[in-house]
Amino acid sequence: MLEDKLLVLKCRRGSKDAMCRIYAKYKDYLLTLAKGLLSEQAAAEDVVHDVFVSFARSARQFQLTGSLKGYLATCVSNRARDKIRARTRQAEALDSVNPSISCSDNPEQRVIEREELMRLRQAISQIPYEQREAVMLHLKGEMKFREIAQLQGVSVSTIHGRYRYGLDKLRSLLNSEVEK
Image (cartoon, rainbow, N blue to C red; front, side):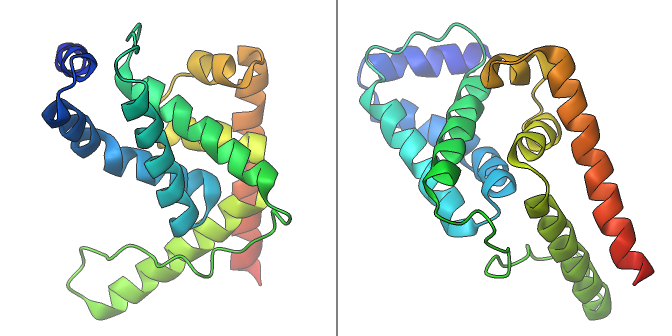
């Protein structure tokens, strides 16, 4: 956190190296979060790019009051929400998303892991956005329920409910696929 404050201070003074360091430090984290929220690689990359461009443009006026990681995650979440609102159809499947490469040396295990990842991504894309956002921000974004509640403008108990219902819906979707 101290490093982030120093980097932000340097950015305010026009340091391109500091901006590059912030980008390098958080881009993978934010891309993972955006992919979880949007279920689409290209859209996730666009959102993360937009967030960093906006951040760079406002760096001279930016005041860091909390966690830079949390601030950027909130920006990604807001941009993802805007992108979903702008879509004419939210029902886009995750078929175009390439599963991440497995660390396994066994080709059969890699195929199984890819299939499981695709099933999980498809299930995540089927739950309501508010629940998906609560689940992804808590699990992938490592945000506390209180922070998610502030972001969404609702009570903490509402976020707890969205998180719980989202997980229940995911279990139901994944278990029903197993039974088929």
